[in-house]
Image (spheres, one colour):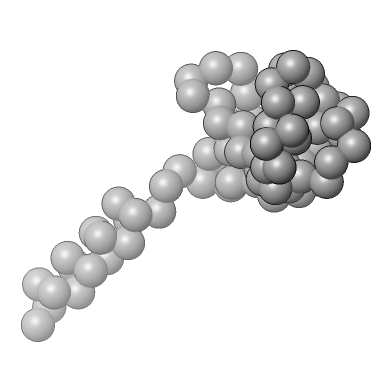
Amino acid sequence: VKQDMALFASWGADLIEVDACNGAVDEATWAQYREAINATGRPMVHSVCAEGMADVWTWGMSVGNMWRVCVRLARQILLLFSINARRD
């Protein structure tokens, strides 16, 4: 993780989104990324993408700058549009 964050910092990255991708979803996992980002000395936004699993809203603030509290909304929005279209 440290090597990857150092590489991203050397490229001038401003935002790092760490996605669970069916892996571990816990505060400790994202804390490792936060520490590695901070060790680079480059200010980068750390986005925690746990998609609402493991009650991320209760700990996301302690390890990231932003966090996702639910799954992707596109499907839900499209569903709302289709329901609305049927009403017309």
